[in-house]
Image 1 (cartoon, rainbow, N blue to C red):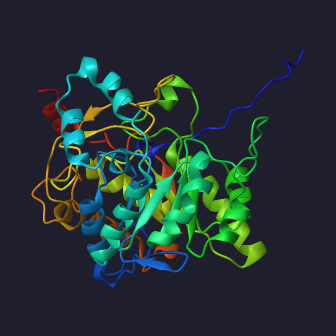
Image 2 (image 1 turned 135 degrees about the horizontal axis):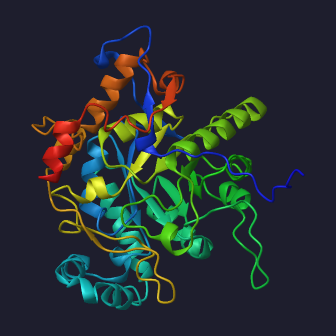
Length: 381
């Protein structure tokens, strides 16, 4: 007799399981346009730095903006809890592994100083940089007036999982449609991984969506909670929601794949899968200018009840400009991310990001190992 099925599982794919098929026409990489537009803000390169304390401080935000990208400063991290965040970051980097989570929990118990919110934003703006900041949904209503008054250009409201419909008996949750109507700057929200959630978030009037739950190098949500979808599948599903919303509304809302990147090839695959931009964390934590001293940790790591992150040592490899644009003598794809994207677009005959979305992709679980026996032997040696 046939057996009824309780659930049906669909295959889902991450960066290492797919490949981009070259196009029938190629184009000079220098003729490609990789701009990313978020509301009224246009970025020269489609790359954001994740709002993590080991990645972004005021100086890093200024530098990345001048290089064409966008760094998101976390307004609930050490930058707004301490007048001297550099000293705190150095202490976190120096802590032994056995003590670091307890130290992080202690560090993040310090109250947020509201005057520092404006100070950090104004410091970025004074340098002529584009300023993006993030807050958690619970504090958005409280801090948004301070953020707007200080002159921030983009507001990011981020949590591990974000939906347009939040059920709570204790309080009236954040209503994104009301938030978007109340501020005159673009609002980006995240994170989500499904077609339905992404579509409903776009319908609230937001200007961008972060895609990804748990793929980050310093995140342990997938291990602790078991939630998440591999990034290629999540990006494809959310890109479908973006295109559906565009047809219905005439408004284009970019999606930004957030987390899980190691190399330039991952970046290129995310764009081919439908992303308009990407958000990098551990990649930028390796920059000489990153404030984490070669360490990286998730913002949920200091949670006093259920930490969903860990501090990892990523090392310091190169200046930010070299990671983005090269030149590099390395052959592993960990530097010159912009060059990688432009070259891949050239191979696919795509002159714009939207054209790159049309590139054919294949399921290819052997893409990183086929014919690479000598390379793999070198890694084992």
